[in-house]
Length: 196
Image (cartoon, rainbow, N blue to C red; front, side):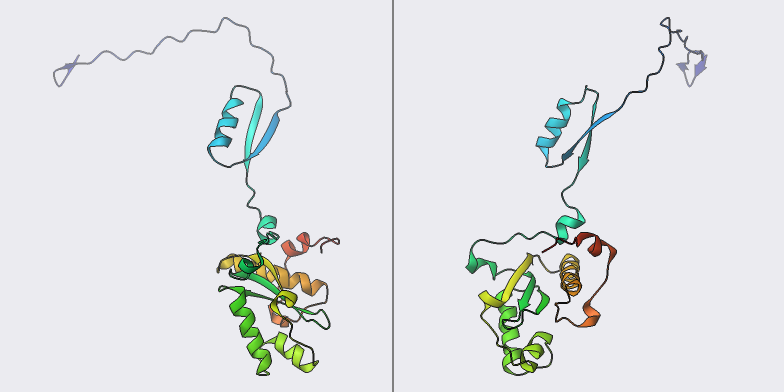
């Protein structure tokens, strides 16, 4: 047959060879799995070593909700830790009540603003209002400010702040406004009885 001057071979079905080996009975084996945290080309190299084995590889991440909310990495250099942004806790030097806040700027700038609201008897800050009403003192940054977590401004910063506010609320130790408290099942799951 010709089609546009080209020879077209006739359509035929290829022969299928029948298997001469008997069917093996299917055995139920317990699959073995190993998990690796994906860190890049090293993980790919390791997983390729197990390619032709009975071991199956699954990838996991260390970027879990728990790690994001409870990442308490502190900087060791005291002068540098106040130059970053994140979530902080201000403690009253006289009664140990705490205020949890966040800043997208550095902690030192935010602390100086808190000090100014205290000196001017401003009612805009619950922390300054508490100190004024109870005639408590305003201590230095090293004694009153604890950096809970370094974080850049954004949605993560808001969530982390809400988590730490809720943590202090469960201890009945907070000075934050009541509307800032956001009960959350995830927060409750993370707050174990032995949580500091």
